[in-house]
Length: 374
Image 1 (tube, rainbow, N blue to C red):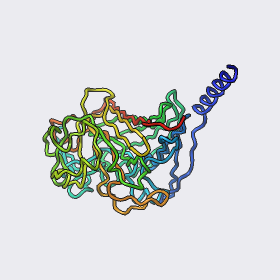
Image 2: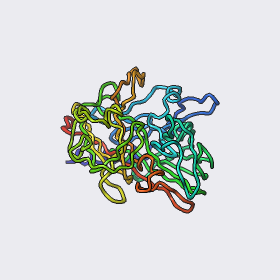
Image 3: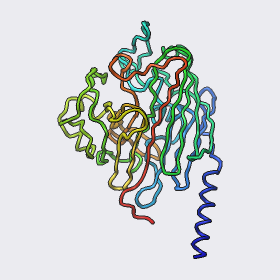
Image 4: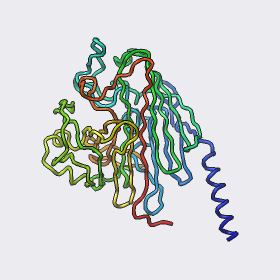
């Protein structure tokens, strides 16, 4: 009995030490301009680990336990800063406007706004030099929930064509219940549009060394927004009923993609916005299960939509530790407002005005099914 009490006290001491330990900061490299880029490593008492860098406010690594108790990588990424400069969207914050805006234009308060065009004739993920290519300042902190880092960036009036000076912050927290919590906040001095998300590629089996087609997914969506052949929403709110987009029951990604569906053929897989069931506040978005490792990822968000993307354009891309990322070696669940919302009055508004506060939260909660370790 005494030994049990002693072990329990030791556990509490170790837990306290872990939660209060300083957050590791390391130098990742320098930009061609000479500006230094740092990485912050966040951990919890279970060994879950996230790494966030100041370039693009990017999540460059996320490690969680499998059903054997092994803590290994579950995101796609690279070993060096130059690789991220060549492929900046991996794990980065997309903004000002994540996803597409048709023809790079929209009307805002009787004024035509023209944005940079970087996706054919369209605007994608904030433009040519979006938030994913900016250097953010960083403030590490230990919170009641766990280790965290808050990154800040001020987007100047006119940047990539957007009006208003926009002050943005993103906080990553690794919580003690094995979740990665991402909180976004922003304020502007002129009316503008804003749609922020994280563009991490996940592979719960092996971090991108093999296909994600055997992953099982469930998405809490009764409707989605069909798109044209340039992936711009048509404006329709379509039911998922009796279609390939009905992922309300668990389905292997590969099985869902086998269907002869024009929307999938055009995108070379899933690259679509699903409309999440539920009102305001944090709500259940999706679950992904990987059968080999037993890893389960549950996603919750305050956002009304999620872009489910199956890595359709990955092609012989050399990644972390010699891995080669091929088509469908990673998936994204980008919680967001809808693509091209500024041009669709019936979609939830993405307008942010002076005096208003933009706030958004997404939580990725990790567990294992069929646990084989004590």
